[in-house]
Length: 349
Image (tube, rainbow, N blue to C red; front, side, top):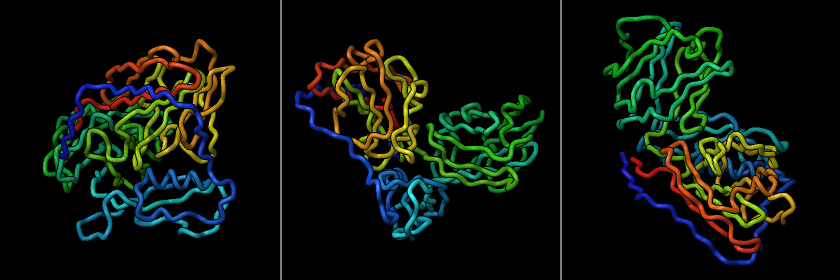
């Protein structure tokens, strides 16, 4: 597994400069669908959103060394590039994936199989249903070894069940609480989430599902840093990664979970919970100048009173990956730009 070591640091830059950045707004009248073949999913989402289209279903295609394309890139898009398509429509993608997990289930038990050649971190994987049933994969273990499996039972049992393809059942357990039985009961589908990113939706009637799960501590399509730019009047969170998503629900800023803040969507197609490359969300101080402190594709906004403008004093930032608190400096003026860059993980494998 690729090991990347982040030293314990917080980089805060205060840059004195006049404000001239404006929002990079999408073209309101695209004629045909853009081409996203060969891009990563986050980069494709940014291009589609900017053109006025919504990211749709993600289908997996098996990647091998014989494939004439890098893994985790777009193999196919439907509709195809150049197709006239009304604004707001979805575009479905097929992605070359080398890292996958297989889910096998029946009325009584659920098995997660790691078919990769490296260990899979279970600490940030969750299964949920529209009805509210959920299960945290960390209850099994912190990691799942290559070609091994974990099992969850909805009934009391004294032993695991052998499943084809599993070299070894690394861990198994049962839960009698129906709120954790996401794959059975009256549920018709469940969602697989990793690091607040939806990795797949599985129909229960199929009894089997394949999903992409990143092996890295920081998933290969999730931004490694939080990037904030602000003045006294405005504060933005922007995804500066060129080919990764930034999941906003995992962030606590100014003492409040980002998911609890009231954000108004500006883009009808972007996902405020998952910022694509170049996208940003702006906080405006009531009565201040409504000008973006840095150029970005603004997809959401909110207005706060003076007391709610947390960035005008030093404020803490935390994220779900490591739970560490870091402090960003307060804004230094109405025309001076302050930047704060925060790593999302101290030690990543």
